[in-house]
Image (cartoon, rainbow, N blue to C red; front, top):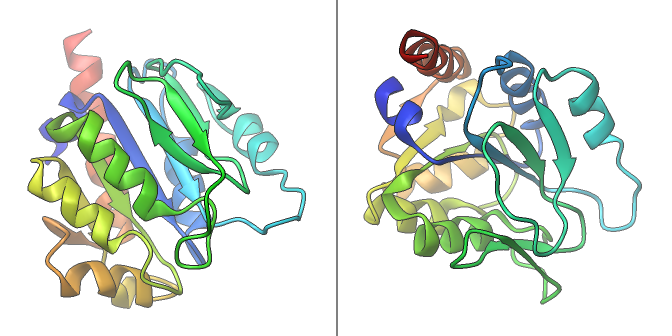
Length: 198
């Protein structure tokens, strides 16, 4: 699994209620030499100002920014999906922001981003679905798995909110079902491969 995390072009970290802490801990662990593009999709309040970018940026050793429409995706960066938009990928591997209706009462929707990633990146993608209080992400994760992407789901009994990961497991969307500590260790193992090869 660490080898597949290492060879992926992009890594998607996603979730809703209860997902912020595990995603934050993974982002904090990224080494300065990390060369992948990391895209974070967390359900966010519709109109509430969020300081998530500053919090991530102040605690991460690689560049962190909120996604803007038409940004070209670059390795060695963490991209945060903005509130009130769906984040998609274009064929030239740039971001596209969409203002269409909420999906699972959410914008950004994890399903929308995952399905777009499956179309553009296919098996060059790794996606991890953490805690959450609805079923967003399950269908998109299944599409990614069918395209050969590495798909990982947090074990429901390890998640603060089990509904989201359980929904993915129920449709066999996760190739691996792991605790947060196992996911973090797999990420760290993938960093070690990067270091060994540099």
